[in-house]
Length: 222
Image 1 (cartoon, one colour):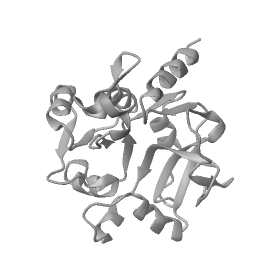
Image 2 (tube, rainbow, N blue to C red):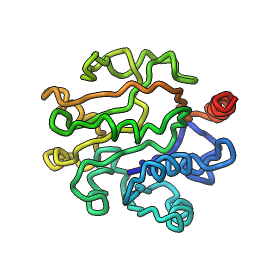
Image 3 (cartoon, helix red, strand yellow):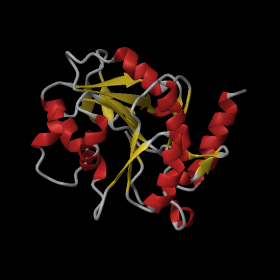
Image 4 (spheres, rainbow, N blue to C red):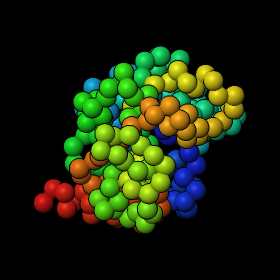
């Protein structure tokens, strides 16, 4: 599941005529960077949720074999968007990806697949130590224990890629909601885990992030 429904308001003029996932980084749209990782990890089916300027994304993604799910009339956020797409995804645990992150290093989806332990985990998040992020100024989203257990607080940054069980979505009453709601329930049950990424990561959340991501990719190839 690639999250592609957002408005991209922090990108300012760059998203007035196109959805944020279509902004180019290193010569290709952001969503194609995500799609390349998903295809290399043999994910099937690949689903993207659409809301803002959906026609442009649908024309781009449909020939690539991506199933698109429209959110209308309102955007549903990450949790509501994932639940809305379950008819296309099925009931098994799924990968989810944000479409606005660039990775330099091993395929995060493949790493998660290798570390996934469904008997003890309800979700496994790819996390990045703050020192390995590019353009990030915060203190992190989670603390990461030696056994991979997560707690809320500073330490590592959630990189926007995870494996997650979806059965808990049915118990949430809100129509539009963040996946943080589901994560909090998993945290309470000691079932939320993280994996430490060894490469570098850049969130293209503002116009300056484009140059930062391109420089990161260029230096990674040296």
